[in-house]
Length: 112
Length: 242
Image (cartoon, rainbow over the protein chains, first blue to last red):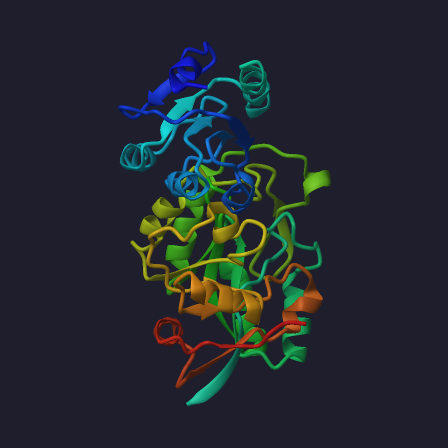
């Protein structure tokens, strides 16, 4: 799925989308323990988390996740947003709980 | 030079997850049975019991106590902060307490948080905030706040629950004074990701654990400078727990 289509979702607010972003989002992951995310998150994922530390960008690079959603109306740290720009990772936020957000994204990707 | 027997990670009755028998009386009972020389008091997110425990332990056992606190960051990383001065530990502890994100909690389910007085008697039950909560501060912020004082900042049990690497996956770019590991295997793993300075603690939550020696420090006396020098020069000698 194209990132533009994900960005159109009414439950997501775009924090940052890299220019010329051409990766397809194929699957999702959710988790806050970055050691677990490193083991289990798959390439071309959209990842739903509560974790805002800068290391989420490094973990995305390692796993090949291409987009991150922070749930519960939380915010990314400023240095995390800066790192996302360097690493070309898309960032979104949502007012929804991680559970609800995952449910909606799951249906979206499944029906694509 | 003397080889001091140490254990720098211990909780008191103030920590909700610590046993209710982690009283000053039991500290004295178990510590005097042990051959320990140097310890620290490191409750979760508060230093309110440090002064009284330190005074009672030092007066009754001859063991030296480093004032400390185990802070939980917003990323749920546990970080030990050791202080040269008790009043600074208390000041920092108050800032952390005020930043805790869970204010009220169920004491019966999650454990009592008990303050002790100068004689070691229970003086007050703290029902807010919940000391098992996270602070609103990040790891980076806690490090920089702690470094305004004379301190050693050491992420606790980095590969275990609430450990730095468990939570953050990759070491953040922070120059910690050391990291705490629990086994030889963990120490080897930590070396591979770039750590070279270590501390080894028992993380005592029950009185029986207070007897355990978790490391040795060679120094001419038990002052904070020597503690920091041992960390910096990679000279803390581990005693692995079974």
